[in-house]
Length: 135
Image 1: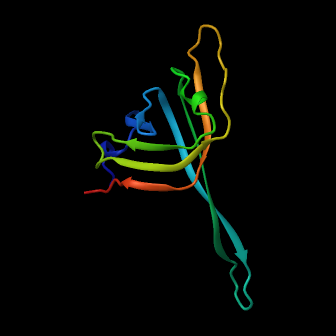
Image 2 (image 1 turned 90 degrees about the vertical axis):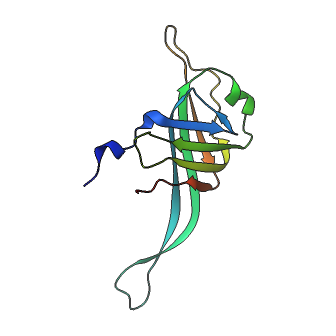
């Protein structure tokens, strides 16, 4: 049975861009999708699959506090995602390699409201630096 205290809360998530902690970011999502080719083989009852190219996509968002993403433009950057809930079995760090913004948000504000900034991006690889494992 799962110990509920071991469930990881996103409250303790951190994002580092090119090694700098982005304290303003409060949401990060990244995933890898793989192309699959269907193969139908003579004499086989089942369709089988051959794996093809992978595609990494992500989105990060939070409060706008600097012009860093505008200045970065479409240059490549590195993201390190860290989850470190103090009650979990440890912490996890994943490095996203060769990230590039899909678009740059130049303006998006409303009087009287905090300015949010969202950046969708692609990446060309990842590395699990520190896995979480149950003791």
